[in-house]
Length: 386
Image (cartoon, rainbow, N blue to C red; front, side, top):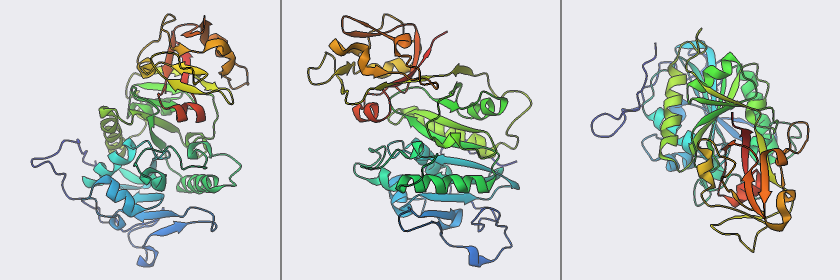
């Protein structure tokens, strides 16, 4: 069995030096310790000049892990795969993170995990995706680069722009690796508790979620996210909590340690009892509608949400909890399409003399006070509370 790193620092506050397994010179999937050293070196997966080259590295080729995580990212310099050989070289697990440049908990946890690395139970392939976006000053502040699409909406055709090319490269490599699971690590748009998201409510998805958290959201929305690709194995997204929440990096680190050291991925009995929520709906702004966050209605925006809206990410939001102000435009400014294209906004929200309230008790998540994310993605997700 692989020794589990508990995440507790030894005396002196430093993690031990990275302990590499003997077969750490294996670079690409399927490479064995005895293969030619000619295959070593940073490999590029690229299909054309317009595409972002993706580095494929083994552990021994990584920039120094002694430096801080931002300096380490700068030395990586581009989207990077990191392949780590495990005790059982016949199996592989894929963990991805930083698909959004403003969601750092996954990469910060990976950097720390690598600093105290012991041989994992099986081969591990890590993807750190939006490196250049994350490094734009101020670091970890941009979801995606200006003028580019959201990478986690690009895992479906067409793949005809830079982000689409990158998503296609990532998708093709994941499929070629034939992993037994795919874990995509994110931060929520605003402060909130951790949860997992999956496209199916199965034994495998519940077990994968249980490595990281105690809540699973099962969605039938198809947005072109990484977890939707058909890689021949179960996949889940892990939302570790807000990027500024202190516990988010700890959640990511504990989950990474758990899933890389577990020999049995899907035990006979569930790993943990989970709260499971089904079929959330995205509440979005209609085109040209503006939003701001203020303690009083703003004359400069069509919709005003209260600056404490992120508190609704915790627990149940009751029908008498005012969410903000929609003014004379009312609910016509919002939409909540389900997978059939039916607008459910009036089933979820109500307007009372311009004030915005839940139409029923709701569970909200991904509520944010970032107006750009609210415009480009959604105000929040909602599901009826039971």
